[in-house]
Each structure stands twice: as structure tokens, then as C-alpha cells.
Image (cartoon, rainbow, N blue to C red; front, side, top):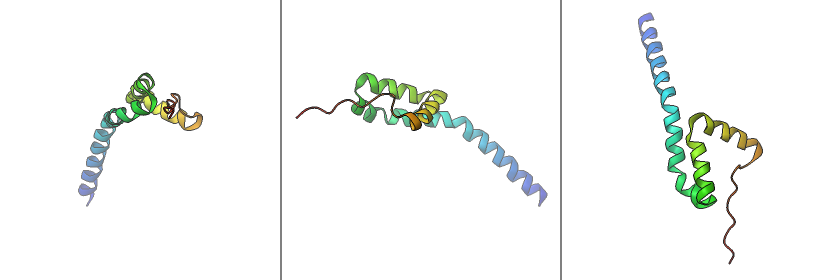
Length: 82
């Protein structure tokens, strides 16, 4: 039984290390996947700046946390007048 527990513990530690290495890549992929909708909503310059900051691993995470308290850094563009 002790051998099985050691194997499970080793496998869990190895899996968590692999997962922790892939988290920045997943965040970047998610930011890039949403880039088109963000650019449409915010305009070209603001959308590219917002997506670029969100795609950077540490900067994007800090930006999201700060925006939760302060609001959007890059405001949406005005809707077209009808």
C-alpha cells in the first residue's frame, strides 16, 4: 500500500509541474482567441493594446486583477450614430 501511495504522490507532483508550466501558454492562447471580438468592441488601437497586455503572462494577470477593482483601462468605442 505504501508503494502505491508513493507512486500516486509522484505522479500528482509531476502532473502539477507540467500543468503549471502550461498555464501561461493557455492564457496567451485564450487572449489571442478573443482578439477579434475585443478589437471589434474597442477599436483597432485600443483592442490591440488590450489584447497585447492580456497575452503577456504576468502582466495580463495583474491587469485583470486591477481591472476587477478599477474598471476597464481601455474603454469601448462609441456606437455609431444612427
